Length: 134
Image (cartoon, rainbow, N blue to C red; front, top):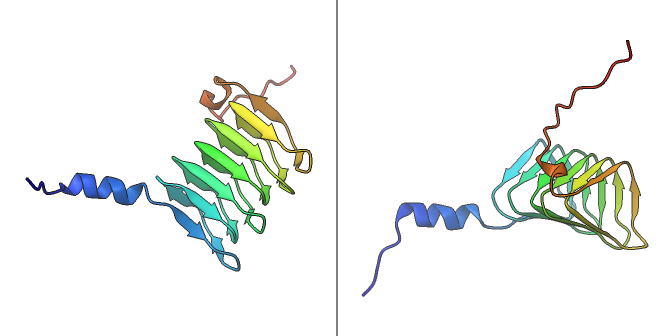
């Protein structure tokens, strides 16, 4: 009648939980997460998430982002790589290159960098050799 959850089922649910970096908090260093991340504070480092990254209006990331999807209302100073949809909302500000399969930018958002779109783009390795003129 009642079944006991195995340890692996319990670990999976814990790894998929959301993390929140509140306003006024600053984290220095890289962050890796299997679940969603909401940033209302400051992260000085790279962010790696297998889920969605949401940056609130007061949020700031000074580093690169690699995630499944992203919803940005704050500021990012670094490159963004998403496998799914990237949304730049409100007064969002991005200074860096974007690699995504789908992109939505509201008129009040700003973006300064190069944009690479398409399903194949996010599969590329980032160690692309640079052509040298001989």
